[in-house]
View (tube, rainbow, N blue to C red):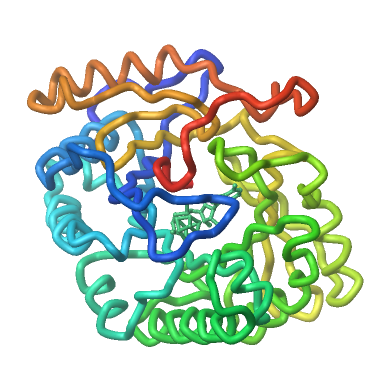
Length: 347
Ligand code: SAM
Ligand code: SF4
């Protein structure tokens, strides 16, 4: 359990979520993300990852989210989950305070044995990303060669991944299984209703993400952002919705279907920024800590990773200095600014 005083940044925001990336590599090449082919040198060892998670837990983290690149490509994933699960069972370990361990994945490698192994290793929740329900758009959004045929195969694979996760015990009605989709105007906004239909059919909550200006490779333009309010409007016209609001520290404004078919969420990072209660710390696979998704540089934790007290001091100082509110200050007219890449940061 946490023994130190609650930590807050310059805007009095607590640390609540650690997003730990396991790899910057990916088996897809979504053009809005553009991952690297290779990992950076000096990936954290299991011991170092555990140290980061333990210290973050001591500083108030309640949710650990493992991400990438594509985390299912990482051989480190299962051993890490097992080690975290063991630590959560020890009441004296700060990780016992973790309320949830979650994973974000594109679902391509989410076979039934993999889903069962993840569950058995202590994973509580999975969010699967899929940006289209139809072949052409799915291929375009995932950067696949092979057009509609390749896209349809991807959609089928991801749907199988959703079924595998459900069969392994991830319960969508308890929020343990969700679907994420980035919506880019002119690229896949025609997929809003097909995606909502697919998610309704699968009984999973769909979370629609505005296309964000993360990284320097995706040629982001404001006119490619479909504001979340318009996404909601389009879905509401087909399946009426009622607002549920956005939980404090959460990213998604949630809406429930009036016909009782569950809920959707929209992540309006561009049109309605939520920096005011952002509680997320991101640590890359090579140990760079970022206090904002839109930062250019992180703080290298490696020099302090061999000592837990030094790591704790460094992470505490970093959070106390934090004053990022990039999305609230963004000026799209001011020209491109430099950002770290999304697949490196982990979303
Ligand atoms: N590969 C995994 C996946 O796709 O779920 C995990 C890493 S991915 C970087 C995490 C999330 O970031 C995904 O839901 C992805 O769609 C989202 N993402 C990536 N680039 C984005 C962008 N430019 N704007 C909005 N969301 C983005
Ligand atoms: Fe890979 Fe996820 Fe980036 Fe797509 S969004 S390229 S699946 S890391």
